[in-house]
Image (cartoon, rainbow, N blue to C red; front, side, top):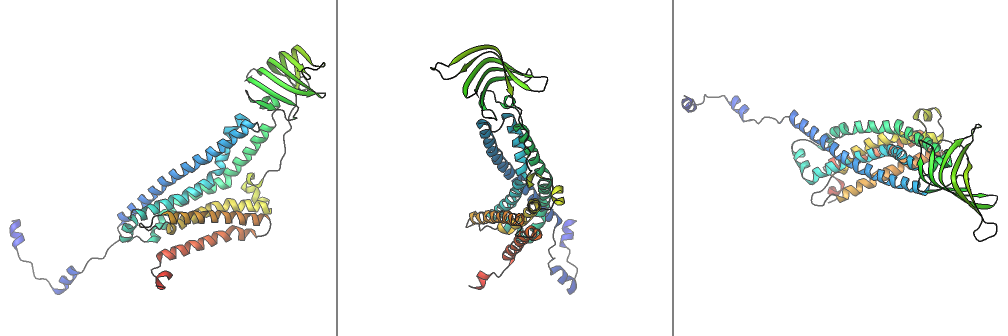
Length: 393
């Protein structure tokens, strides 16, 4: 039966029907193609961004840890304050790290697409360069919102807590600030402590060494044990038990050695320093209420971070162009130069606003509008068929 149907002659068709059959159907934009393009691109942006952010955060945390440990070894910082200050410092650097990660993730992903000739496939399927703006913005807008939250709220809070924590550490007395197994000079520069072991629960110390200057004479005391006591009037004392005091210069006639069962030394209470907080540690609401030039400069820096992140994310689209035959080093160098120039110009304009040389509105939007115009020029250069170089040939 099917063989008979295949052998049947075709019915005669009119010329209009034949022309309709011969005309090709117009190409339609497939929603599946757009969905696959959007999802795959955003997913690759996120994976690349997480990788870049993890690397940058590791570098920053490592460098800050080395600096804080150096301060702790030199005695400028207590050992128990290293981790807290490290956390506050990392939280302060997060907005800048997220901005760099956003820019590099878009740039490296699109550069890889050019290098592997994937961009040619997307272009041939009807996806132009401007179609990349939508997935980039889908990826960049949540990151920019997180940057705004960090720069406007969390980073000032972290800096204020770090300053408060430093003042609290500086206000501790000499015994509490001493590090077991390390020599430490008192804040009055008249005593040097060495404690081998500290029992914070019982308030006792083991194997104490104290060198002090009293009445122009240098005295050294060594005791196996010591404890802290508080007098009825509130004064605190370090009581050394079963020790020996050496006073004077060895070999001279006034050199004395005295053994004691109990020796009390008054612990001087350190005063809490009252310093003027820097604009970086002030809250955003306070900066809006107190509109001094330097407060407005700091406010512009906080607002400019998410704005610059969005501009750089869009600028990475034309900057990512790579000639597969020439490599991708040139566009990466150019992108890094533009990023460094952008951030330096933001810092310069902010300092000019703080010094009163530039109006706050011009300092806030002038540099961003300039970079936005540069981004439009780069887009036009990539989209233009007849470039200036081709016309001059």
